[in-house]
Amino acid sequence: MAMQQQQHKQQERCTREKVPAVGRVAIIGGGISGLAAAKQLAGHDPVVFEATASIGGVWKHCVYRSTRLQTPRPDYEFSDMPWRNRDDPTFPTHGEIIDYLEDYADKFDLWRYIMLGAKVVGVKFLGGPAAGFTELWSGTGEPLQGKPMWEVGVSTSDSDDDVQWYKFEFVVMCTGKYGDVPRMPVFPPGKGPEVFKGQVMHSLDYCKLNEQETVELMRGKKVVVVGYKKSAIDLALECAQANQVTCNVIITNWGRPDPISDTYSAPEKVTLVLIRRTLHLEKFFYTTCEGGQACTMLVRTLHWVVPSYSIWGLPFFLFYSTRFSQLFYERPNQGVLRSLLCRLMAPLKAGVSKFIESYLSWKLPLSEYGLRPEHPFVEDYASCQMAILPDGFFDMAGRDLIRFRRSAGGWCFSENGVVLDDGTEVEADLVFLATGFEGKDKLRSVLPEPFRGLVVNKSAMMPLYRHHHTRTHSSGSMADGEVARACRGTIHPLIPNMAFVGYVESVSNLHTSELRCRWLAGLLGRRFPLPAVEEMVRHVDGETEAMRRTTRFYRRHCISTYSIHDSDAMCADLGSRVHRKPNWLAELFAPYNNQDYKEE
Ligand SMILES: Cc1cc2nc3c(=O)[nH]c(=O)nc-3n(C[C@H](O)[C@H](O)[C@H](O)COP(=O)(O)OP(=O)(O)OC[C@H]3O[C@@H](n4cnc5c(N)ncnc54)[C@H](O)[C@@H]3O)c2cc1C
Image (cartoon, rainbow, N blue to C red; front, top):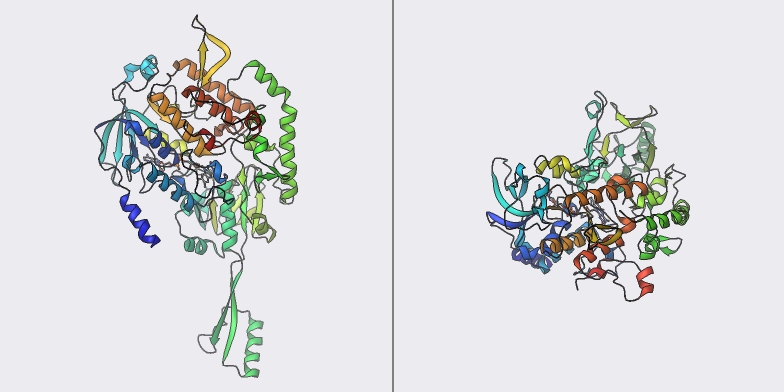
C-alpha cells in the first residue's frame, strides 16, 4: 500500500520538460539551496537545472548508510514547513531528509520548475567586455532590466556535444560546497597511490556502494581512513562495525571436502579428529570468525568533537545561539565601539570556550588517544567544523577497532600502506581518502573567464557579499558606523546578475540558504537596490578580516558566531521585523531558529 502511494506520488511529480529560449531566472542545482531559491523566486517562473536524476543534492549522493543530520531537527527546517515529527529528538537520517525535501517540493509545487538530468556545462556572459565595472549590476543596482545577461549551456545526455543554450536575465548558482568533486591529496612522484599495492578510494566513491558492498569491501581488511572530520569519523565507525568479529556456527557431516582444513590450525585438527574417533561422531559443528581488523584514522589537524548538544547539563544553544551570547563576538564591518566591546569581552569568550573544552575533555577520552586539540573550541565552532560524534565511536576505539595516528607534517603511500611524517609505516589493504571536496571547482568549471578567476579571493575565501547598505546623510556621504541595512553573502560584486546560495555556512545551512533566497527575491523584486560595486568590495574585505580575527580556519566562510546579526541584516533590507521574539527576555536568551523567520 505504502509502495503504491509512493509510486502514485512519483507519477504526480511532473518536472519541467520545456525551457523557454529566453527566461528570467535560472537556478543551477536542485539541493536544499536550489529548492529554497525555486520557492522564493517562484514569481519569476525560474528554471532549476539539476544534473542528477533526483533532488536533494548531498543528501542523495554524498552520504553513507549511517549518515545523519548533525543539526537538531527543529533548526534544519524551512520556515514554512516544520518537520511533522519536529519534537523527535533523534537526528534525521539522510532518507528522512530526502522525504522531507520531496514533501517540500510537493507542498509548494516546485517540481514544475525543476528539470532533472540537466547538467549545466557552461555559462556565457552576454554583457560583453565593453560593459566594464561601472555597468556591472546594470549600473543601477537593480538586476532585472529585461535583457538577457547570461547564456546557460545544458547537457541532458552523456555527450558533451549535445548542449542546448538558453538565455536568462539572472542566474542563481546552487551547485553546493560538498560532493561531486573530490579533493585529492597530491604527492611527489613515487610516493602517491601508484606505488601502493592495495586499494585507494575517496569517500565520495564509498557513498555509491550499497550496504552489502560496503561491508564486503571492508570486512577483514586493514583499513586506513585519512581525515578527521565528520565524513572521516562516520566512515571509520562503519569500518569498525564491518570489522566486528562475527562468528558463525556451522553444522556439517564429516567427509570430503574436509570442512576443518582451512579453519583450524594443525594441533586443533588433531584434537578434533581424536574427539570424532573416540565419540564415533557422524556430524559435528564448528565456528568460523570474520572481521577483527582495526581501522586506523590518519589525523592531520585535530578538531573538537562533541557527543551531544548538552554541556555540563546546559543546552548548547546558550553558548553561541542566543542574541545575548552573540553580542560579544565580532561581526564584519562593525564600528569602533563594538570592536572595543568585543575586546573587553575576550576573557568571557575564552571562559565559555574553556567551559565547553573542560566538559569534552572529561566526557571523551581525547587525551588518552592524543586527540585533544590545542586550539580553543570556539575556533572550530566559528569555522563550522564542529562534528557531532556518532554513537559508539569511542567504544569501538576502546575495543581497538579504531586506532588513531597523528601525522601533522603529511604522509605518503608505500607499497604496503602509508608512511607517516615520522617515518613509521601503517600497513593497509585499503586506504580511504576522507579528504573533502573541491566545491569551488564546480563553479570554476561552469563560469567563463574573467569571472572564473574571481571565485576565490587572496584568502582562498569566496568573496561573497554581505553588503552594508549604509544610510546616507543629506549631503549624500556615508555616515561612518551608522549601519542601517546589510545583506548577506549572496552576490559577488564583480559578477553581475548572478547570485551564489549555499556557499556560506552556519549551524543550519538550510536556514542560511533559505533566508538568502528570500533576500534575493527582495533584490529581484526591487525592494532595495544594491550599493555601488566599490562599497561591496570594501565590505567583503571587512568580512574576511572579521573571520580572520575569530578563527585560524577562516577560509571556510562560516557565520555561526554572528548568525542572528546576519539574519537581522537581511530582515532589515527586506523591511521586515528584526526582533522576532515575543518579549525582551526571550529576545536575549532564547535560541533563534527558522520558525522565527516565518514570512509575515
Ligand atoms: C555528509 C554531510 C553531512 C552534512 N551535515 C550537515 C548538518 O548536519 N547540518 C547542516 O547545516 N549542513 C550539513 N551539511 C552541509 C550540506 O551540504 C547543506 O546542509 C546542504 O544540504 C547543502 O545544500 P546545497 O543545495 O547548497 O548543495 P548540494 O546539496 O550539494 O546540492 C547541489 C546540487 O547541485 C547539483 N549540481 C552541481 N553542479 C551542477 C551543474 N553543473 N548543473 C546542474 N546541477 C548541478 C548537484 O547535483 C546537487 O544536486 C552536510 C553535508 C554533508 C556532505
